[in-house]
Image (cartoon, rainbow, N blue to C red):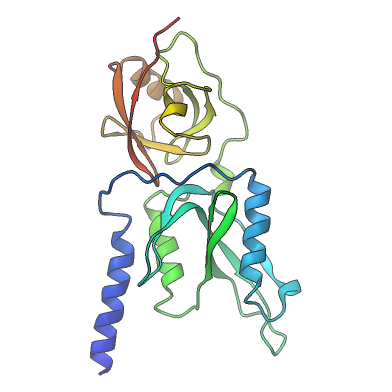
Length: 236
């Protein structure tokens, strides 16, 4: 019986971890949360509902938010903007249990899913978060550029400005009614590949050169969303 349960558990873990590997159609996560502060405040309120002593909770929001979906084990995908963090709280004996991973998903500025890991060898939240981190879906919050990137008017326009982060090109500016805006891209998304060419590790001038030499239509791979085709606007 134990062997059967172990096989079933491992199969569930495999299904969870394959979500980040299997190519899928692009997912529309809806509008980006109104602010990072609102996302975190609402997320903490949702997480604390299951705590014995909510006032003792310690939160670490160490990862940036991303648009796409979270796939809980044995449940349907939860679409929206999501992230993983760490939380510690006290038990009934008054001692801290240690930091555990949690996940929060928000859609249309409302928390639609939240879960804290249980710890142990088969902590599905921990396993899912670590897989997402390794795949580049959740860059460190500290890696998100604080500066606003400029858009060089001499470059072919796909309607966004970017900064370089470890996982690719972080979109920091969206031109209203431009190609990126019309395709549903938003600030905070990260481009990991252009026309199937990975750009992780490229510097700013190299990515700018790639953009300059693209054809009229190009495919941008967005972490957590998939491939998006953009047709550049004419140079004025």
